[in-house]
Amino acid sequence: VQLVESGGGLVQAGGSLRLSCAASGRTFRSYDMGWFRQAPGKEGEFVSRINWSGRSTDYRDSVKGRFTISRNNAKKTVYLQMNSLKSEDTAVYYCATAPSDSGSNYPSAYNYWGQGTRVTVSS
Image (cartoon, rainbow, N blue to C red; front, side, top):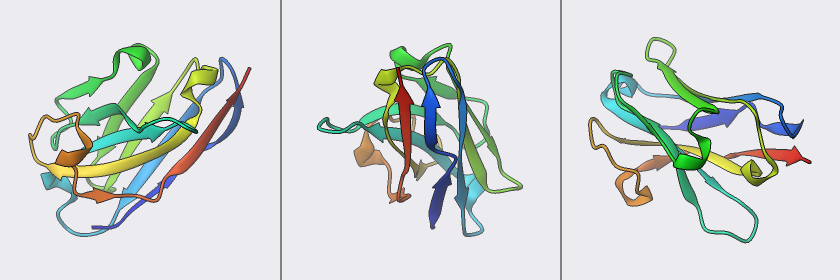
């Protein structure tokens, strides 16, 4: 599985971005998908995940109500809609795959990773 993120960029605080993660391979619909991020000088952290069917999602507390994860299995793509962005959302964002219904927020549960897309929020 290969994952390619896109949609990052520079945005002012309060603005919005939509990240996309396009997957290759024929088994996309069998994977849970997650978004993680790593800010400069900090450890990586879980952002959001969605199960294979799209019926189950989870978010870190700091993005609840602002970020929305979704997926289109026909397009083999997972999205992260980010609204009301804050300077603390500045990071490189990575998407990753996990076995279906793994229900994990830990990076160790994810086996394929994209190269990341940079998000910079100016205050």
